[in-house]
Image 1 (cartoon, rainbow, N blue to C red):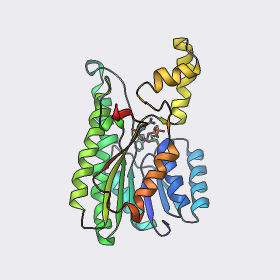
Image 2: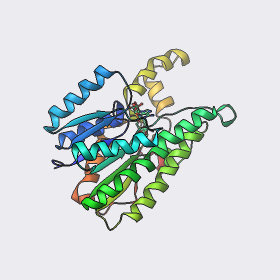
Image 3: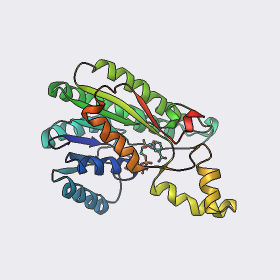
Length: 260
Ligand code: NAD
């Protein structure tokens, strides 16, 4: 049902971002993927997305720490794919350290990539969406947009911030056919998470199940990972007519984490 629409997904060369791109392409949207990684692997994903959607798939290497590259990303989408009709602010990095040991340049990078980039992409995309009378803005926040964990000051600050940005732009665009929402996953099963399990088993002398339940999923009552596909399916739902009254919302998908 997204045939004729274009979507920019930041940080979509892996993980949740790539799952969004696949889900939008499966609905027929043109997609512009973004992020870092191995050039050949990215080209393979791009070609697969184009084949799935029957529409165009482009890759743009815009660095989310660079406002002018973010504006150029939106402009390129407009020129080459139309729109942008859908933007997903998803690029993100993490660093875990107590504040006194937290490197200032890492703090600045997390705020730029996980939060400030969303402001710049919204600023660039909203005029096109207003002109079209339709738009969908989705940001991947996190359970950490609602609750904190120690040693994640920059990440928790950025994720709380993106909820405020979402509410504000939702109000500014409420009569323009545009909705602005966050999805807040708990622990999502990504290759990144999977890769940590063997090392943690070795380092702590635990079984695979103990690592999953007592270390990774300690905060998640369902004791199950959220899947990338579940997150992407919610984003697709937010693009449909049934979701047109959902705006300014922060939708949790966290296995009960923030209910506790
Ligand atoms: P990931 O590491 O698999 O993907 C991150 C993406 O961001 C990659 O494509 C990477 O290349 C890109 N990226 C990093 N720096 C960039 C920059 N400067 N410019 C452009 N792209 C850049 O991680 P993921 O788990 O898929 O996370 C995606 C989003 O979901 C993040 O915002 C993260 O905070 C959020 N999230 C993840 C989880 C989880 O458990 N995995 C839970 C809640 C929220």
